[in-house]
Image (cartoon, rainbow, N blue to C red; front, side, top):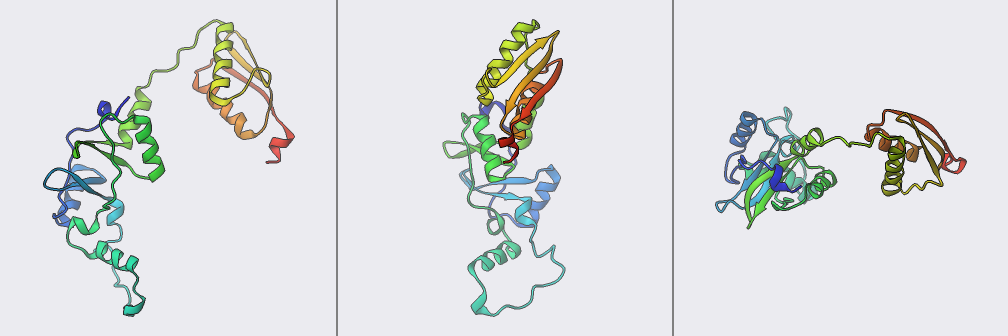
Length: 224
């Protein structure tokens, strides 16, 4: 699945020349926590988020003490501008991660996680055409079809052994799979409690009717 399949196409954006107060009003009125900032050519030049606004001077009740000029760092000057500047350009984050309409959703999700951001502008030919948020991606979890396992015990056993090998690299020699009347029993040794939990996640994710966990964590794994 690609960005164009789930992206919001009617994107609320804002100009870098707009005042911060107006930008905040737009965010609150539209119940959004971030806005793409676009120039006159509809090219993304920044992002304005709630996080960018948390250190604004309007929020701070007490003024900071005076500082000697020689000890004011460039980082402090940048913070001062973002806290006191009038325009969106003074507050926004200029380094924006973007994606294309044909970008894979899995890649976008990884970018959101890695960079701890909530949304990704989608651009085509340099211009803003959509946006993908965490919520858009989470919707895929609800809409995803459940895995349909075969009903016969032997078929369930084969499917589970295949997934154990492909997902977790666990061979039948290490973990033995038995299925009786739809109830799965796993026996054997694993190197760590973490791997045991991963196996349980795999089994439960398949919608197994019942699960008996007879796995033992080896002493070497327990000592890690």
